[in-house]
Length: 84
Image 1: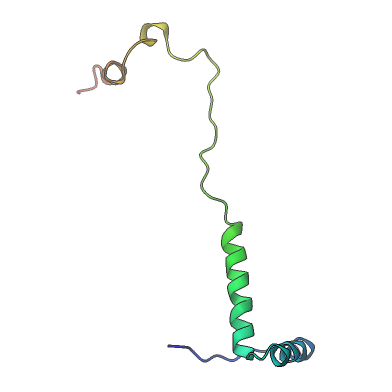
Image 2: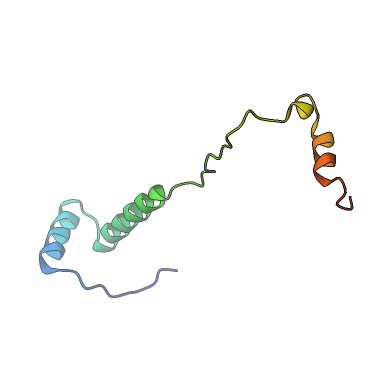
């Protein structure tokens, strides 16, 4: 259901909008809705998607003892002596 609202628009802008509405055989409501849709779409596009920041450590990767180890061995070593 459409909602009614009141807007204060500058006289020059309103005159231009009325001329466009008349020339295009449309309504002021349609012009306002079109404008709002465009603004909303642009603002949604501006939002930056989440990006995981790149984090590196200075080193040569895994310790040589774990170079060929699977995740299970690495995890077990991490938690060794910690009750797991």
